Image (tube, rainbow, N blue to C red):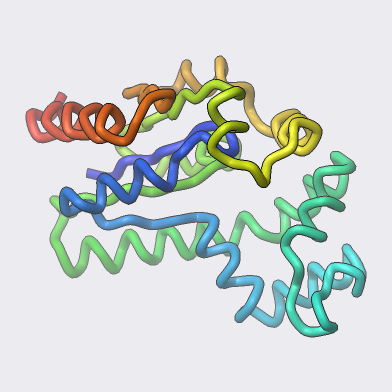
Length: 197
């Protein structure tokens, strides 16, 4: 069973994916893969530097993801360009990891794929069920001091609106309460999945 989890930025997708991993789900994190690729994949790194310039480097060595994000989210063409560079290798790596997990655990392997752009990149075709996380903007601001309204607004306008994401959801998780409430929802979903609902 492969589950894809998505939602708005700061909605708590990774926290929920980690709860699933407590219940024997193998977690694949698209953001972590992207960060890793930027560090280790020289071809990808060179493509980013060619299109976004040396100013995205930190101490002339490492790609500063904040600087890169600020540039990409300031212009739709730049955003689409970055996605065209990053998404194919990320999707390829996700598929590779799914293959490895299935080889190790069998076809009944339990996998959760944490992917902010699960629906926008059509990663949906590689998962059996989709979970959409619903979190109010006020809750996101309260929990994440690093997010500013203008930044969230910039990022959100390049993502599928939540109401559209909800149309693709097999399950919806409400992340506006505490961790106990959150884990209770995860447990209920796992029980339904175990019953092949």
